[in-house]
Length: 392
Image (cartoon, rainbow, N blue to C red; front, side, top):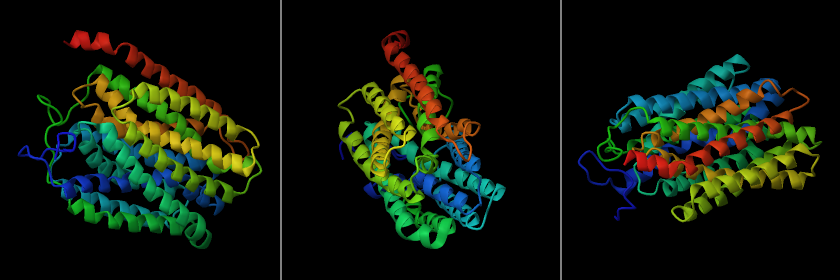
């Protein structure tokens, strides 16, 4: 294997087998599988009167916050050892939480999804730990996000065509539980441990100040799309469109995300991260304008498709941004936590703005957060050379 193809070092310093590298990516698929399926699942729970419209955002926030805190704490406190045992335990815990959601309503849903988030966070820590140790992390992150989106797309299609129309939200969470059980196979194929993050660096610990600022930028930028995306079904209803249009928009968006993730993988190492972030922000604003008007079904679906493409195109480039700010890569291990915290904070901030009859005020909040995050990124980029000179 070439240096670029070696994703992780084992405890002895040699690269792991290809199966182990693939397993490290595969276990993370269940960690973020739910993110692309919030709209149909939580929308179905609301349609069944098991959640209110404001609780849609709260349920998404609870799960994402739990995932983010679990990922962050694991990155700062845990040594990457006994990975197989950890992966198996987390997969089983996730399956149990998904099963508990099947008959839950109201506060029971929030409790079950909080437990699911903790298990998802541990699985994500395993995957992000591998990506942070690569020579081109944006390429590995792009591959991860693309595979994850393919899995989300397959489930979203099944939800829209068969599972939710016939079995309701309970059928959707049963499908997620089966996916978590299937995750036991890659968990058993993981390497026993990971090597050090970088020469002279410890395995865990908090990042330096610029690393924290880069994580803040990730958090703010990610909270914008997180707040907007979870209310997709509400935008459709307020535009006079049927709930089925929103479900169609979800799987079309996931299909577009596959293209976005593939584009990010191809662009890795060839384009500056800030160029991707700035272009993505501009395209997101165009999409959100489309959500704010009474667009026809085709226009609404197209806007969400473009939004999905942008989301997967920008996500892998958080990692090189954070590594540029913190070359020790300790902050890079927290990338997943920062993205998820942002994804949770967006719906939580929108909680006070949305009602059963109006969710469009969330779009203005999203625009403010998006531009604020981009401003922090611009400052990091502009001050990069002076910071590097001081460190030297």
